[in-house]
Amino acid sequence: MLIQVLFYVFAAILVVAALGVITSRNPVYSALALVLCFVTAAAIWLLLEAEFLAVVLVLVYVGAVMVLFLFVVMMLDINLERLREGFTRFAWLGWVTALAVIFEIVAVVWARGNRGLGLDTSHGGTPTPADYSNTLELGKLLYTRYAYPLELAAMLLLVAIVAAITLTLRHRAGYKQQDISAQVAVRPQQRLRVVKMDPEPRA
Image (cartoon, rainbow, N blue to C red; front, side, top):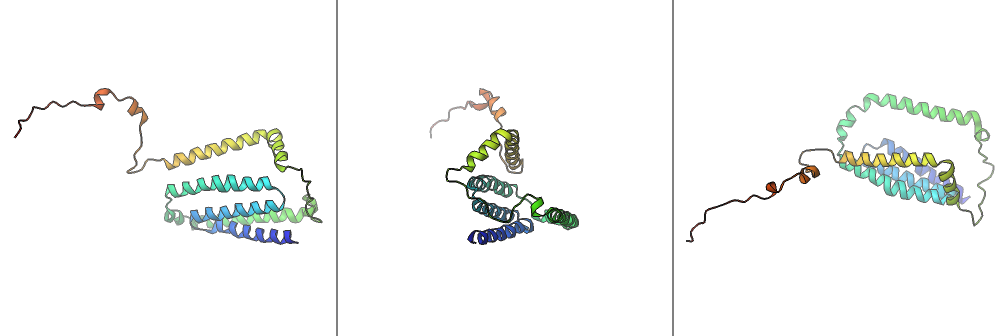
C-alpha cells in the first residue's frame, strides 16, 4: 500500500515537473524542472528495485549532462525576446503535434489493453533474491547484445559535448583568443628590440 501511494505521489510530481519544462519561458527554469523530472524518475526506479538505473540517472544526467546544459545556456546569452517574437506564429503547429501524439498513445493503449501490451497488473513486482545484481544483468546486455548501440550513444554524447564547447567559444567583441600558430612562428627579432640612445649628461 505504501509503495502504491509513493508511486502516485512521485508520478504526480513527475508530470508537474514535465509540464514546467515545456511551459517555462526561461530556459534555466526549464532545465531545473528537467532536473526535478530526472530525480523523481530515479525515485520511481528505486520503487521498482532498479537501484543501478536510478543511481546512473542521477549521476550521469543530473550531475553531468544537465550541469553542462545549464552552463551552455548561460554562456550562450540567448536573446529571449527575439525567440518569443516568432513563437505565436508556430504555436498552432505545436498544439496539433502534441494532440496527435496524445491521441496515438491513448489509441494504442485503448486498442490493445493491458493484456495486449504484455503488462500484468494483477499483482506487484516479484521480489528478487538477496544475491541478485541488476548491475550484472544490465552489463551483460549492454556489452553483448547492445554493444554497438552503446558505442554509438557514447559517440553521440562526445559530439554533443564538443559542439557545446565550440558554441561557447565563438568570436565576439572584446574576446581574446590565443593563436598558437602565430606564437610558434614568431622570430627572435620580433621578441626583442634593442634601442641605441645617446648618453645624457648628469645634472
